[in-house]
Length: 206
Ligand SMILES: Cc1cc2nc3c(=O)[nH]c(=O)nc-3n(C[C@H](O)[C@H](O)[C@H](O)COP(=O)(O)O)c2cc1C
Image (cartoon, rainbow, N blue to C red; front, top):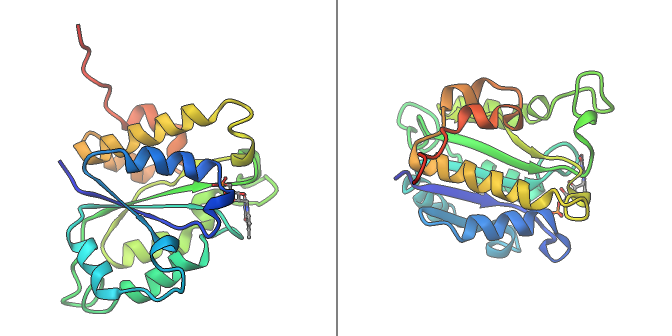
């Protein structure tokens, strides 16, 4: 069983609907460590040694966050800036992250149609997240296609949220149990589109 670390960044969980539901699912899973960064570091005073140790003890990383201005909330960037140090994450002796998959799970206020080349934002989510992907590549990680939750603010009312949470649970389970096709998941533009192809079906039970 792989050790999955979910790094969650949301500055206003008191107002969150989508991420709160996703968080509850992730927190309840065996083999998944859930770190609520804003709860742990409300003053942005990140404990670098502790974070690096958490990363050493993990095989797979997940960044879970709402999309803020086409990126992540600020604390996740601060965390990356401080924790992915030379000699730890990169450089000739910085191999702590090498080979580890990174999955970004991002809730978006806007509809899927906006995140298209010819859509309102003129870019796929993965393209907008290219600084994360390049950072992961630079550190020798395996960046997987992001999983997007679109029109997140309407998901509960439109009765989509339970299905999204179930997909998130399936994704974390497959990552943890080594049943996710990492090659296919890395190649797709958006994980949502290939979910049933990248996750091996559960063995049938009688
Ligand atoms: C400061 C700020 C910036 C935002 N920027 C974007 C954005 O660039 N794209 C987008 O789709 N939604 C954007 N949103 C909407 C949030 O992504 C959305 O409210 C959130 O994902 C809903 O999840 P939650 O219920 O867990 O908060 C933004 C919201 C805030 C507060």
